[in-house]
Amino acid sequence: MSDDKDITRELWSSRLPICFILSEEDMTKVNRSELPEPLYLMLSRHIYFPFILDKISRYFSTYYKVDSSNSNNSTSSSNINLNNIWLEFEGIPLKWHYPIGVLYDLYTNDLTLTSSTSSSLPWQITVHFTKFPETELIRFPDKESIEAHYMSTLKEADSLKHKGKIIGDMQKRDHKQLWNSLAQDKYDQFWNINAKLMSYTENLQYFRYIPFRLYRLDKPFIQKLFSPFDTNTNSMLTLGDLVQFALINEAACDVNNELNLINTRIEQFRIIIHGTQPSLQTPVQWLSEYFSYPDNFLHICLVDK
Figure 1 (cartoon, rainbow, N blue to C red):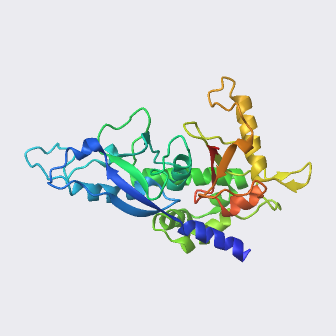
Figure 2 (cartoon, rainbow, N blue to C red; figure 1 turned 120 degrees about the vertical axis):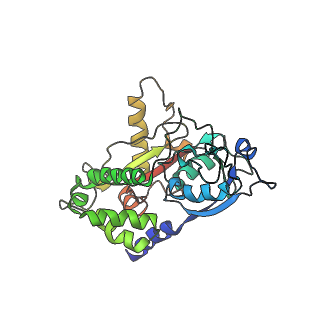
Figure 3 (tube, helix red, strand yellow; figure 1 turned 45 degrees about the vertical axis):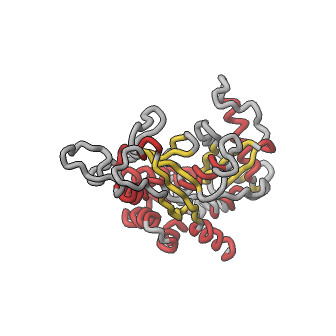
């Protein structure tokens, strides 16, 4: 059990080297003789991009001189609007409410997107200050909205696992500790509370349902009710069972084939969680306890082989 616990610490400590470059269009608006150098950051896989928008804005705004005669200059160092910032990889706008690690696993492992340069680290992301893609993204919210989104997802996960009893019995300060420790990268403080959310209830040795989301490129994520225990065979179910169940059920619901799930054979996919490809025979209950993101969901990326 102690070795299993070490896995959660290793996953928490995992980082992605990311190179942020300014878009070509915004590069033309630079008012200094030298062009902006890329910004390099080592970021946790489990955080969200809005966590570091202030840092990105401050860095690139230094390349713009304040035009005192035009207070409406949207790219002056004094008034860059964070709501207008958006991030892009290989022409794809990146969703702010997906953890960074999920976005990386989904997009950099797809062979139709990546080349020999873009698939290598550091991950190169383009920063835009203009031409926000209104039809493809929602704007980056304030920090309070990000916290509300995180807590809503966490409550959904506990509703699936425990009918919401555990998080419902927590004090408001516990909820705040979960959020603050995530935002401040404090593993021990986070797990002091999160361990309660990984416990069992109702005399079971497993969760009622596994909180999971299955991601495919350019498709809505798949989420179904899935119990980790098969009462018919009296056995624990595996990652392979979960993925196969989700694909088959989604294909049955997709009458018009909008999700393009013609092939539901899991052998045709690479199944990636936290940058790794766990064995399909891994008990999904174990994965839920030790491989879930801080929002308590298993975020599983399916990439075509």
